[in-house]
Length: 561
Image (cartoon, rainbow, N blue to C red):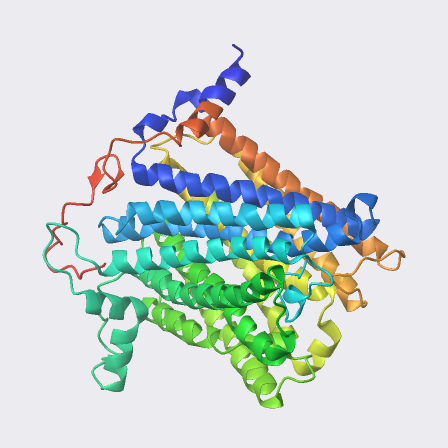
């Protein structure tokens, strides 16, 4: 057997032994594997859409094009980002709190519900071309002149499965923070939850007991507080989308059994506001809060020191949580029937606060890194810096859209999905997730060494340049008037689309290089071995760390430090 074949089968040096994994390590790696598989789905679909924007392809005839355009963001968000984020946090919450996960079985249910749900709506869209677009604007999902009700029912069922899995994740996280494991002294559940959500500090502020000159002791660490607060937005988001899905299913089931319902019974504008309130919690709440928490955690782990201005970091997380509930109307600034008060209040004024909250997180993370100089430019550090750069570009681009005047020009153009959405998701969020993956890889694999640092460098530069480049060229086309969700048969925007497609190809190269590097690190045998059962109890997070045993805090150390 050649050296290449040996490495491909057994991994670099045969160092990765799946039989040595604990159940929590194996489960987390399964989340990562499926998250990367769905990222590959979204990347290939995205590349096909970019090619179609250069020259419309017979393969992507209109019905298939719009079906792909519907599935593409849903697979990327729910199939890739959710699985990577949920997998990491399912491991990190018990790891940071040094206590067992509340329910290992529930974490497995979360994984498989999301995996099956995403495949269900993706495969349904592929076969039936169900294409209400990811916004599901009423009454389009229930337009049975365009779509078959059975196709729509299967699609929405897939989305509903994802939302149920998401609710299980939220329950697991919040219960892990607050419950008392067997054999432990009773934990103050109410105080733990209050500290995690910032309610304790808020109560002290309003009762005059918050002392500015004294650093407050916290029961829950800053990264866990971020996970808890982001989970609140996840809870609202999942509940709203699940409710909307059930509403749509009622119309579909009625149509299937010959009892057509009047779509005019649902107020389209009210539905839009309700739906965007829920959907926007993914971006303006869940992503920004989870990302900020991940930045703080990575900064702590990379530097080995506490986060700079930790009190302000907690304040920014609390402010972002409240802001995220009130900014949805910036998606409806160009909707003529949307009330002016909501456009100005929610759409413009409140949205501007996101520049402050994310700006604080950006500054605190950079300041923490800066004060720890000199630092070795490791993979987690440079991907973290890439993620910071992504949001430094994407957040101001979004704030620009949240202006009534500019929105009239930019709304529904390539600008929205280019400099804002794709740069935020592909550069800001995804590079932050890659930083976490590179950091957690040796922890989750019990010390397996990365196959090639050179390939990791190629991954970094191709992803960074490709992500920013694609967003920038799409944005330039948008400024010239190129609409999104539109097939162009003329060459008016061809130069921009060629450059965007080349940038997209760099992103695809980056993913292939990363995937190859991971496969050669773990080996095909190791990847298959992830799905074998472990005899170790789930309370053992990594070998030698059984968190079922209550830790004894050091004398004078605050809990949750």
